[in-house]
Image (cartoon, rainbow, N blue to C red; front, top):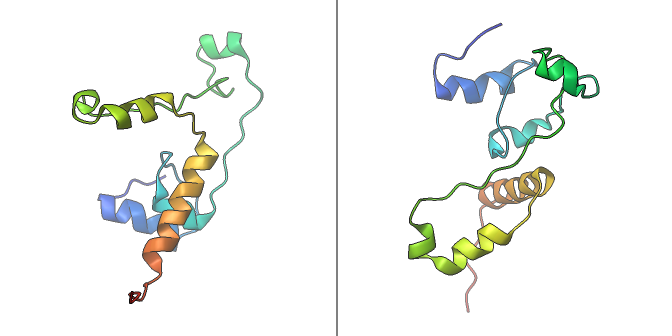
Length: 111
């Protein structure tokens, strides 16, 4: 078991060493590693409530957080975010698209 000594090392170590590591989603830092989930036994609500964390929780919500004044500064954007329903697979897809866009240099188009 190890802990990275800095955020930069946290980002580099999993790309150098094949190992189990923890990361948060949605985050595009490790999309290129094609990570897989560790699968825990089927959820057992009683065991989970008793502190047996070897069972997965039944649901992990994907929260949407914004600045406290976004509704005032950009009400249309706030409503769009408030009414959107994106799952984690969709968020990861958008992250991969973003990585592809930034990794390819685009030549300017005359027009």
